[in-house]
Image 1 (cartoon, chains in turn yellow, blue, green):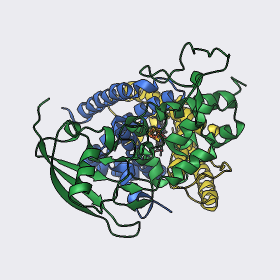
Image 2 (cartoon, chains in turn cyan, blue, purple):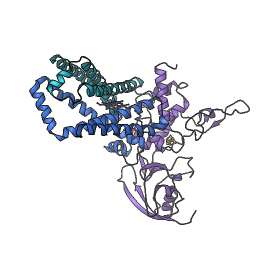
Image 3 (tube, helix red, strand yellow):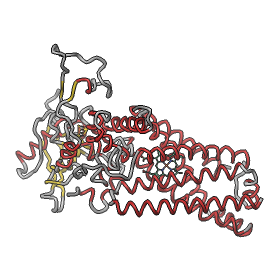
Image 4 (cartoon, chains in turn purple, red, brown):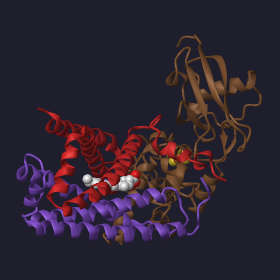
Length: 123
Length: 130
Length: 247
Ligand code: HEM
Ligand code: SF4
């Protein structure tokens, strides 16, 4: 333990926390729907190429998967970020970390949605 | 001055060492380990899905090789287990954060963890059962 | 109560200063199972090794000086009964608190905790209306008796600044600046509405959001503070204030 900083440090606050919790809850809901839908749409499992393409013919599926992707990236990035904050990095390191998460997270989301649109377009 | 725990990698031990921990501490360890596992899986999954764009042969060959390896099935079960444990415990943390049921956090953990175990057993039977 | 004593081996962490190598010394003594761990430590110091460094004052859980880890769990040695932590012929492992700089053997420097408590102007006394009824969980008393002159009764706060909670907290292990359970509890008990500076501190990087709900602080707190509950209640209050449910 070290002495307290008299000035509160920026970098974590109620809004980030709420985003983490709410995105976690959305992931939970979408994952539950995903399991139920898969059970009815593809009771034998979803593996081979044609099965996947067929599955994505229903427009609700890419929407569901896309929602999942966006919120799981947000949630897991905020989660990892808070693990990093637990190591008490300097503000300078945190600026780099934040940039990596924002740029990387956006790149992953763009890639994922491109993939969804591509696969849905194959049907 | 830093304490011994804050030097070197000793803090890692205090994050993950289950000795002497109470139920809440064990839940924290499980939550963190499953979270890291799920992140690893998420990004591997996204990476391998790229093969869907390479046509049916590539994808089906990938699925066949995965189907032949027992590790993939076990790995999948681990992901499901991680998702259930982390997700259900996440509900507990979320509720507690609004100061709901904090005095019952242990009972809540027992209940949700039992639910997760039932879910894991269900999927295990579903995947590996006859 | 029988007069029979137990044979117990104390395995004690020894370290001459922060920079020297730690090791463990073993002392086997006869001790009554109804005695306390601190009694054993004092016996060892008196009859076996006068160089043993440990700290205590009151012997009855008010001073918070004898906090240490007994078999890996944070305890006040003065109120930890031998019979509760070992058996006849058994062992007791004693280590200093974690997450504080070591002074020597079983003593750590609690200065960082005291200075953080000072930083959040933790009160020396609190009004009776802000104190919990014992045994009912953390609730303000339903009816606070009034003094004849209309003033409020005051009492000492529950927190004895023993540092057990900080030692048990996994976040405190890796983030030396984290305010930690006792300090956040001290913010809670003063109220964030009355103290905007404390609200800002609680809603900052080293505040309530660093907590990961391991609840170890409340598991080890010897003094009815229930810091984890207070951290969660602070979260609820901060969320309500920031979302303007409550001005
Ligand atoms: C299924 C629904 C999920 C829920 C309800 C949920 C909920 C939560 C909650 C409440 C936390 C905060 C823990 C804390 O700070 O003490 C958390 C942390 C975290 N979550 Fe999730 N989560 C879910 C799914 C996921 C998934 C799928 C991933 C990864 C791809 C993930 C990654 C993380 C990470 C990395 C953390 C940080 C862990 C830590 O602080 O130790 N979560 N989650
Ligand atoms: S909150 Fe409890 S454990 Fe922490 S310093 Fe105060 S009395 Fe000790």
